[in-house]
Image (cartoon, rainbow, N blue to C red; front, side, top):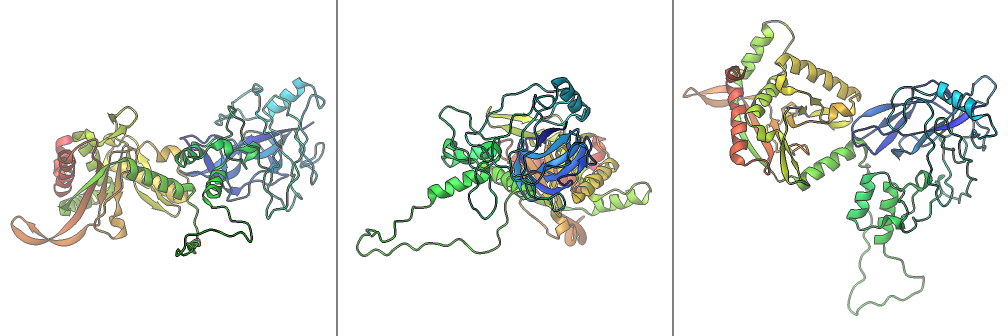
Amino acid sequence: MAQVLEFKLPDLGEGLTEAEIVRWLVNVGDVVAIDQPVVEVETAKAMVEVPCPYGGVVTARFGEEGTELPVGAPLLTVAVGASADGGTPAAPAPGAEPTPAGPSASPASSADSAVSSEYSGNVLVGYGTAGPAARRRRIRPQSPAVANPTPNATAGPAPTATAPAVKAGTPAPVAAAPAPVAAAPAPVAAAVATAAPGGPLPVISPLVRKLARDRGLDLREVRGSGPEGLILRADVERALTARETPVAAPVGAAVAMPVGTAAPAVSAAPAGERIPLRGLRGAVADKLSRSRTEIPDATCWVDADATELMAARAAMNAAGGPKISLLALLARICAHALARFPELNSTVDTAAREIVRLPQVHLGFAAQTPRGLVVPVVRDAGTRTAESFTEEFARLTESARQGTLTPADLTGGTFTLNNYGVFGVDGSTPIVNHPEAAMLGVGRIIPKPWVHQGELAVRQVVQLSLTFDHRVCDGGTAGGFLRYVADCVEQPAVLLRTV
């Protein structure tokens, strides 16, 4: 007999607490293999295909495309041991609950054997690897929640009852009876009563906790609309809106106002297109806001004659072999400059009130993609050649355009290089990429009149700007770093002293 297992959104690593469903890769009734990707989600860092560790028949999906789910929320349920061509039904009948595997279904040993044969041996964060997992006590909500699986045109109406959460090798708890659903424009999960004093709060996301703490909202007064009463960001925002909205006076009631004062005008919500700040756009907004809030930054800039650098690049490419990009030469210059000025390759531990100088240079570079601005990271920049930089920049840029960058590709940077000259602009004041300490901006390289060897000439000129955290160093250090970079741009032979 088939055993219905619930697959929850796993921990995708790097501190990610939520993801948005971009595209379902399976439908209700489909047969899935172990480790087969079942859904494509977008996190704050990258697009990820999530594989299911169970093999069987999909009996329910949770969440429409475009829905944002927290880590630990149900994604789908799989009937392990079911077949699509007979024996066990491929999908539950319309309106019926997924059949749980209980003690009366089969002996425990046969159930464990069936589960282990249909369970991935690969590590998936939050899901063990082999063998039946230990049974854990589940915290039940005070009122049952009604799941809202995604409807499927080919498999008929999806089930509307709560899908039982079953861990490998343990009998599934009996599903709670469906709670009556009030008439609403769309099916909504039943709200759970507020948490009892001293009891656990059904909150997973630290962003939700921070939002409530910053606005002085007691989460025990919030009713969660997520699975099993989980409190989502939308619930907190709804509670804050309700708290700040004045209660309307009863119809016919007179409102006392001072004589001679006019009634306050009610300001309507501004009209226009509303774009949710979530996913990558939300992550960028949060990081930039945090940088401006926490980092006392300062900016210095200088114009440099890049004629010799452009000539050196042309000579290197004319000599044969892989072509060297201008960004690769600038990255190599940055790596050598950071070796001379390690203060800028650091971060600030605000809790310990310490500056942490980092032993290795991991160079991030700003890349504009159809999904928005991302900053891939080139590891061990201090040991790379110009050819190595060119290859790695090309690989990461292509992955960024395809949306296949992993969270590891986007984290761990210690310094950022921002070449905004590709947009046809000369200068900018970059915002430091928190928690780094500095960012070098490079404008376009264009012919300009320049005094060269005592005479006026037309030279290739570029503006370099450095934004730095004033906590890690003073202007003398930042100016020395920027001047060294400019010297290397004007005279690339300076780099030969460090080879």
